[in-house]
Image (tube, one colour):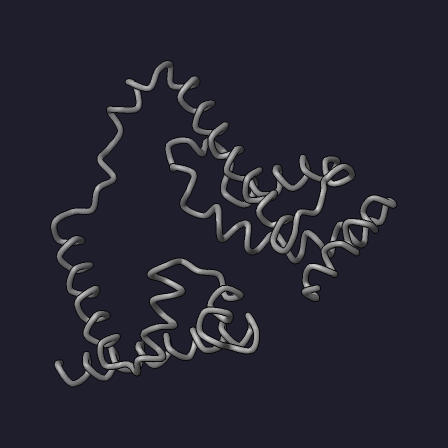
Length: 193
C-alpha cells in the first residue's frame, strides 16, 4: 500500500476516534492542493465577500463530520472526495450569486472577460516560444511534459507509463524537464534581444 494512502487511513481512523491533531495534520496536507485546484474556478462575479481560501475552509469544516462514515475506495479517494465537495460548493456559490443578482440575464451586463487582442498576441508569442523550446528538448523530456500537461496525468500514472521508479521520481523528472525548457526559452530570449 502507498505510504500516503496508509497515512490517510491512519489519520481518518484517528479523526474518527476524536483526534484534533489528526484533523490538523490532514488539513495541513490537503488544504494546499485543494486551494490550488479551486483557484480560478469560482468566477469573480460569484465570490461575494468570500475568497478561494474561505471556500476551501468551509468545505473542509463541513466534510469533517462526513469522514466518520466515509469509505476508502483506493488511492486518491480522499482527495477525490474533497475535490468533489469543492466543485459542489463552487456550483452552489454560482447559484447563490445568480439568485442575488435577480436572474442570469442580469449577469450579462458584466464586462467581457475575454482577453484583449494585445493579450492574445502576447500569449500566442509566448506559446510559440514555448513550443520552440520544447522541440529542442530530448525525446524523454518531451514525453514527460506531454504526459503531465498534454494528457494531464498524475505523477503516479507517469511513473508507470514512462518507467520511473515512483511518483516522486516522475515529479522530479517533470520539474527538471520544465527547468530545461525554461533555460532554453531564456537563452533564446537573450539571444534574440
